[in-house]
Image (tube, rainbow, N blue to C red; front, side, top):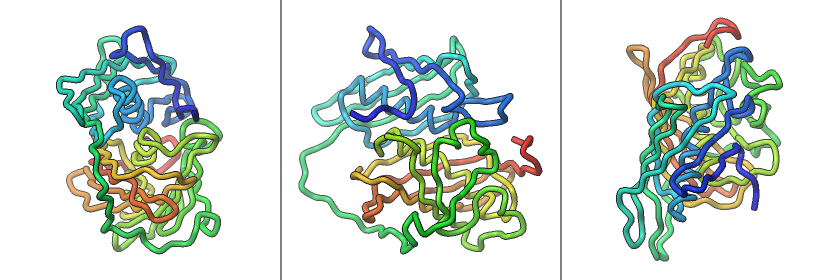
Length: 272
């Protein structure tokens, strides 16, 4: 069994989990790190799957506050409904009495031979033929230093200024560095890269803080890289909205995601 990308730990209570925060699951300035939003959703998905014994179908996270290392995030799993094939569950992730992330989800599977896909993966070069994408704050620390990114379309990092993307679309190949499976928690982490498309769409060194993250799982298949088709739908009043389609290398649509973001324009590495 491959390890998780984060250090989620069980307790004697099957409905209580905890996550010690270390810099490698955090983002931000090196002197002001905080938990990456995708880690909040991913750890909640892993906790719910561990508690119910069922795979996630969809999960949506509402980001309420920041958790900073070296604090410990407690995850309380509630399962108000458990049917024959699916369960409805909720996680409240908190540090002490401070609520950080609330996640609602459905988990389960039904016996069915139907498996079809209508959304096709865009035609792009394979990862090895795409330019590396260096995160604008990737300096050998934090979560972004643990992800490898290749840019298939658009601009990523600090080369976006003055080059707006007319269709607001960014195509990235992403994979974790190390022996980590592409599973639902990992797709939740990758899906939280939707804000990366904000700067590409605007032609500015911009991104933002996620207000939410919704992940819908179709079918997960073995793959090393994930193609992320990021589409920024619009920006207005200081907020942006975007979506992502996550494909395996063989073209299988594994999941979809969507987010709303507080838009922030960054002039220097110190801006957040």
